[in-house]
Length: 251
Length: 377
Image 1 (cartoon, rainbow over the protein chains, first blue to last red):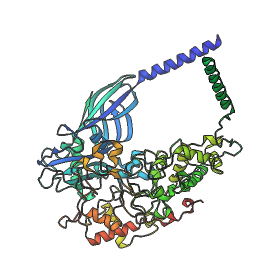
Image 2 (cartoon, rainbow over the protein chains, first blue to last red):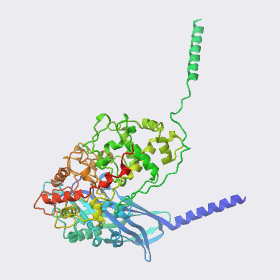
Image 3 (cartoon, each protein chain N blue to C red):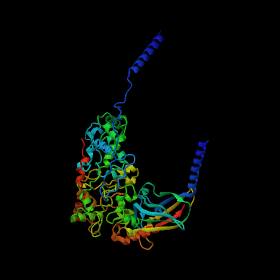
Image 4 (cartoon, chains in turn red, brown):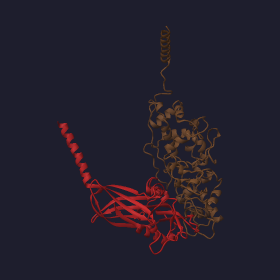
């Protein structure tokens, strides 16, 4: 009898804990989709650049940091640093979405979400891949540029037609980093996190808008490589456009 | 009468069969012996890496121990793994060649030729994107299983290897010490692979190359080496950018990625003769891509590329300066460096000489002389 009572109390406690957890926390799936002029991107496919040249994509990736949800009075940090890499999606699942799952989000209404494109100075100045293991994003030596002493905040690589024959024949590589390249993203949302349920947020990026601010556009054939601090103006142009190109919607 | 005779004959045959069956001894497993009298007390081994290197991730199910590394090292150097006892792992991964065999393609038993050059195992414990030139093995433990049964390499079956190891005079005790097995029958290919993987993870740069010493402030580059480093890393705008450091990023001087570096022409994705990573991934866009090798000890690992087509570093550089061959997935960073009208890319002879001077600073003599990596037999 006594044993049965103890068992029932424990079971009731477990159930109530579980119920409390469900009541107090929900989940978020943060998704990213990348297009070019509204078209899904596939490695090997040819797109038309703003100047009419053939354009092909190989890589697109960026660091996100301080991914957060905000309500009027508080901020919920979802992730310190995350790495969004679309290279394999361009091959294996064109038009697919890159997803990040976050759980144990306090229930409530959130009015905005935000993140940085890049790594904040307090990390970028103090750490390099040697402080991490090879499977952590900040441990990826491919995403760190020794000559700057900085993580590469974003990479966009592909090929463009350089001789007007319609064939993507000249490589371009935009590797942008350094503290001045950090961009803060903040978007208004009206998100309700309900206990035990999963909300979905979609960030859409159209790469065509990364190369143009609506008035000026990058001459990719002339400026085929960006990975030098001397190209700060061009870096800022691309990073400003990338930040502006990210639109957020709730699903 | 005829029927009775037949029945008698059948009974006789059945009885004879029964006699034979009873006469057969109960088969015993060969070399089934208890090992519990051997002390099992493995000592954790910390893999020490040079300053500036990442923390090496060790799989939780295969922690590195002194006993595991010792066993792995013996297996690595023992031709017992091959069918005819002539080829060991070390046949194709020789310490003098920074764990390559310095041949265009490796040679297996009976002088059989493989289709690929042996890759350097230097710092292989950091490889986390797939092993082999085509990335077919996800982990070191998985990779070790392959060459034993490859027809052109060791051409042995793991069943036979397990049998040889179980009956060996010394290996059962070594397996016991490394993994705590209680009986020789518990020796498996998977434990052998774990041991060899443990040894391979210890194959780390010594930190004694000139490059490493300069990084630590213990030495200085010559002027040529310094200029070559700047060209390699695109460190200054008034020198050409050789684009090397993207794929051969320090400190490992590889990113372990799979890329098409323009060594073959192809009109479409399906036109590559050796499809490389595409065979592994199953996506045609990956055809013609191969694993980026480390440039550490590059002057010890000739010849170069997955098929050893380039005999010297100078030949490799000539290939890259020319911009490589055209194909639909040639990496965007493989661009011409022979156009004098494009000073940010143009690599004249002096620049090439300086770049090569820098690459010499990546030679790590202490690694190839380390007695911990040498043949234990």
